[in-house]
Figure 1 (tube, helix red, strand yellow):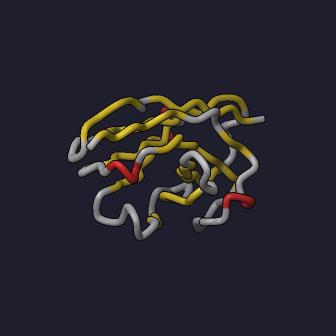
Figure 2 (figure 1 turned 135 degrees about the vertical axis):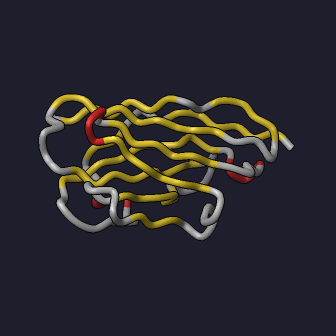
Length: 125
């Protein structure tokens, strides 16, 4: 099993930046592709960004492209999401997700069997 724990969320103002972290533990010796999703109240879970195991491939939702950067440190089993120029519509619970895969990225949440508990991001206007 793999456990994922997110951190770094909080209350910020529009235009601010946040760096979310996702620490993995447990069976981390495999090759895992990782992603960030978010879910606002009353809305479906939404793909934000994904990164391949090597970090060589990344993919972003149009809503965060140019403002978000996903990265990873495999030596520390940690994935990051840097979000800049935050907007009120970015407010949501942000979830880290993982799947065993040596290559590629996936945007469908059903492809990820491992999930964290989420971290709340609230952006005030």
